[in-house]
Amino acid sequence: MSKNFAVIGVGGYIAPRHLRAIRDTGNRIVAAVDIKDSVGVLDQYSFNTRFFTEIERFDRHLEKLRRGTETERVHFVSVCSPNYLHDSHCRLALRIGADVICEKPLAMTSKETAQLVKLAASRPDQVFAVNYNLRFYPAVLQLRAAVQRGDLGDIFHVNGSYMQDWLLKDTDYNWRLLPNEGGALRAVSDIGTHWMDAASFILGSKISEVYAQLETLHKTRKRPLGEVQTYSKAGAAMKYDTYPVQTEDYAAVLLRWGSGVFGSVNVSQVAAGRKNCLRLEIYGSKKSACWNSEEPNSIQYGSRDGANELSLRGSPGFMEDVAGFSDYPGGHAEGFPDAFKMNMRAVYTAISTGKKPAIPFASVEDGHHEVKVCDAILKSSKTRKWVKV
Image 1 (cartoon, rainbow, N blue to C red):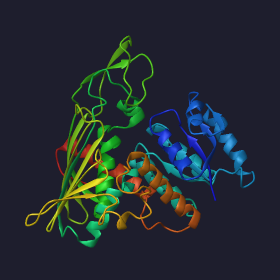
Image 2 (cartoon, rainbow, N blue to C red):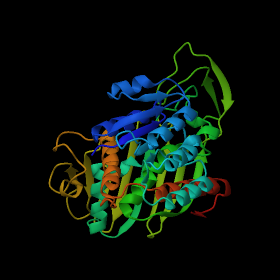
Image 3 (cartoon, one colour):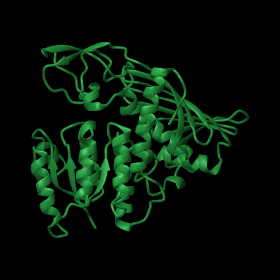
């Protein structure tokens, strides 16, 4: 049975991925809100729904739907608003009795996320997920299964990076650059946490300690006197204000997991030529494995005594472990939008069956832990010491 969704924030970059995933899993949207008129975004996905530009009117509408029939009631809320609003919007969703999926980070501070964990625990019948959708790339699921089986042997260390260039120039601008809207960390919080969650998911262990160095390469930037969407570029005729930058462009982080595995990750949003490149390398006593998100349907395996291998999704050894989370046969690429769909499918299955899924989506507790990791990274960058999470 399909479910009724409400979406908070539909005008940015990430919300259309939620909209597509909602559509592709056979569900519908009955209400949406954004501070600007973005109803055209909903039209692109064939959603005919009530649209609001004021959160108060949206809230009152949800309360009315809550008391309506089953076909009117909001079952699920997708929170796609800017980071500083996540806490209040998640609370709104929980208050009306809806299940919720929130974009990361779960909130701006670990104090806020701790309170959300407590609130969610008081409502055990409501599902609360955080959108770390990289867990549901088939390659990430395959690597998780390989580690669990011991195919790579004992894991020695994990290395990787997440590189983008969309903030390479000092004229590139987005609200994420502002700490009061995006948070004290930017590159780490925005993309680094995706890498850390994926690596932790594969290892089956949480990060327990960090040592970090943060760098702001553009000490000042130029802010357009007009709105610029994520990944878009300001026009040549745009006028600018100059402002000091208080968030990092680049980070180098050493990591220890609770299982004892050691690792490192480099994160940059000023890496020329890299559009959205996540690399994850796992080194074990038997084999190594490497995955690159820009080539999402293949895994490279390394061996000292035998031939190195390239494993392709849909081929033997890369199909059985991802059954149910890969819709297309081999040779038909699956990527970022499909990971959203599979994440939503796992959440939706948990809601429909009332059971924990075989492949766990990121929970409110996971979202809380990632914010605590960010707190530790920020502290480490200032003290130049290892900091426990």
